[in-house]
Each structure stands twice: as C-alpha cells, then as structure tokens.
Length: 497
Image (cartoon, rainbow, N blue to C red; front, side):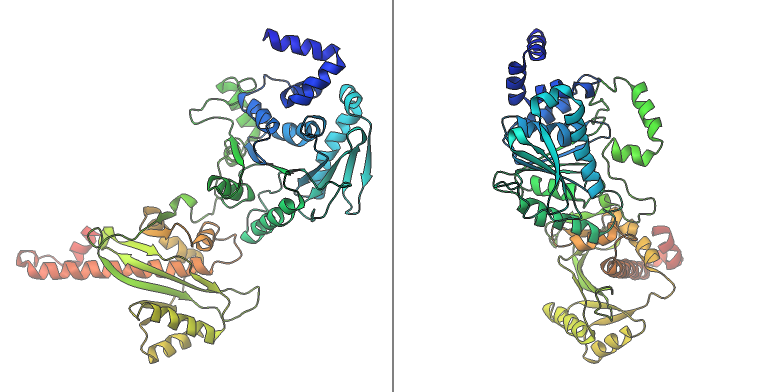
C-alpha cells in the first residue's frame, strides 16, 4: 500500500510520471483520469477486467456483469481512451450500440470527459468532432492520429477507414435488448451483423470487446460464449453476477452486507429483473411452455440389453403454401425404446423443415419411408387437404396413420407433452435439433412452430401407444393368472397407471 500511495503521489505532481505510468497501466489510467467514478473500493472482478483489457493475449473479450458494476464506464469509455493513449496505440476505435442514439451517447460521454476533465484534456487534447461519409459521429484525437466513431447495429461498418487504418478496436455495448432477442429472426439478424459486418470490418490485429447482459439462451452473447467454450472462437468469456455461488458479494466495497443487497433489491422491485440483471440468470417469460433445462440429450442409442427397441415413427405436419411468410412442412422422426415407465423417445437429428408443395411433400415422405425400408409408422394430420396425402400413401401401401387435432390448438397440444419432456422420456440429439429446440423453448414468441407441433403429434402417439401396449399386457397377465380374474382389468390399470 505504501508503494501504491507513493506512485499516486508522484502521479499527482509530475505530468511525465503520470503519462508514463498511465501509458503502461490501464488500472492506473482509470484511477487517475476517472477517479471521480471511483466511489467505492475497486472490486476484485473489476481488477480482473482491467488486467484482461490491458493484456494483449485475447483479441476477443466478452464481459457480462451485473447492472451498476461499472462495465460500460470501464470498457466503453475509459478503455477506449486508454487503448489510444496507452501502449496499445489504437488508431481507429468503433463503438457500437443497438441504435445510433445509444452509440452516440457512449461517444458523448467520452466527449464530455475530454471537455470537462482538465487533467485528461491537458494530457490527451486537442480533439475535434466530425461526421463522416457514413453519417456517423466521430471524435478525432489529433495528438495521437486517432479517431473514435459511433455506429449501430442498424448500419454496416464494413469499409470504414481512418486514413490508412481499418478499425483496430471495436466495442459492442448492449447491442441487444429483451425485444430484439425474442424471435429467432431477430437474433439471427444480430448474429449476421456481428459476423458479417463487425468482424470483417477489422484487420488481423483488431480487438473486439462485447459487453452486455444475459437475455436469452440463443442471444449473441450466449452464441459467442458457446463458440469460445467449444474452441471455435479464440477469445475469453467472463461472467460477473453480484453474488457468487456461495452468496458472497463480488463488490464488497459497495455491497458489504446483506442489508445493502436487500436495499438494492428493493430498488429494482421485480424478481425477474433482479435475477436477470444482477444474478445473470436467464428467466423464462411467465407464459413459457418449455424451459431449456427440460431438454434432455443423448449421444448414442441404448443397447438391446438396456432397453428393447420398439419401433420407428415419424410425424408429418404438412403445409400447403410456399410463400416466405407461410408455415413450413415439418417432419420429425424418432426411434422408440422400452415400455411403460421405461419408455424413451429418441428424436433423430436434422428433421425436415422446408416449404414444399404437395408433390414435394409426397416424395419426401416416400423417401423417408424407403430409407427405413417401410418399417416406420408415418403420422400425418388428417385435416382438410392433408387427407389426400394420407389416401395416396395408403393406396401405395405405405405404413401411414391419419391423426386429427380437432378441438385442440397448438398451445394445448404442446402443453400435453411437457411432462414427458421434463421427465426425460423425450431425448434430443446433441447436434442437429437446434431449430426444433428453439421452437419449443420459444413457443408463442418464435415466428414459426411447425416442428414443435409435429413433435407434439409424435410424442402423443408414442405415449398413447405405450399405454395401449401396457394395458394389453396387463389384460393378458390377468387371463394367465386365474386368481386375478375376479378383478376388472380396467380397475387394475387405473391403480397401476
């Protein structure tokens, strides 16, 4: 501590020492030029952020931290400036937000510091404000030949340059919100913007920093996390909830005891908001039918000794239109093992989910049946024009069963299979079922739900088949045991199941 006080003393009185120390250390840069933001003792997680940003090891960093943690102040304001002034010597920084207004607000915060912070202005100035050909607002730091530009997810940043420099630092701060992550279409749009515009806009040495919160299992941040953890993206993901797994505060200087945490919680007022924004837990909407933790996966099929194989089944949800806004034809196939409480339904990977006309649907179903040597049960909705599909397949002796869903809407049908999803009766492949899982977890919000509806048909059939098989076995058992014949098989069934 004495050494740190000595450094602080020399920094305060000697400009050359101040510039030398702050050039090498982002931690000191922040505590010198942004000391007016330091109202509490710096937390260990914040020191880790300073260290990771200061280091040149990771080109991609993803930070998720609780509301009020100072993440935007540290990354989007202070680090952007240190990356120019400090030894990293960045020449063209781009700050992106979800909207142009949000991005410009980040730039405005930097501008205010440069205007009102006398020490910072004296060491960094002069600077000027300009607009470029993209209509983006920029600040130019003449002493360093550097530029900072504000952009949004609504615009492409590919091709942006500052003289000979392409963006060498890109900061993405809260580029998603609860509305933008609701639909797969919107999430895909953000991901395409990041991979198709943000990353290609830089160069080999460009650093990308993403700051935000956990809003959805399939959000940009969660996709980046998955890519990093699977080794598909070189980078580092860090998550900082307010309380760790043992309910200890990650910022003891600000939240030192239970009383201070409870006070903060009362300010929020909403349990969902508290868990999402402070504890970094992704919570479902109140009307969500299927939770992500109910999705059980498998890697291999069971052996005959573990579970006997029963049959293969496919559920078809036909759609008549090929318009872009129309539903798609969905076909889900599964292998079914075991009986009674040991029944397991193994969903096969890569289900069909395409816009097909009638003849294409017919050929696709036939091809599927032939792949399984016609040893498969084909379940097809028997309502309206779909009846023609059933009749044509029956005529050619394909193993088809017409099913009717009259009197039930999709939500009711999917609700009926949720206990079987939750119990683990239904198992999904590790890979190849992403679209199906997204439709299940996002049912009611996602634009399409054809696969989810086909799954409801398939699981309902497998469960009903299981009950029939079990009841038939019970009736046979009663017949073979005369002392049980005084009991009605139906009453025995009800007691057992």
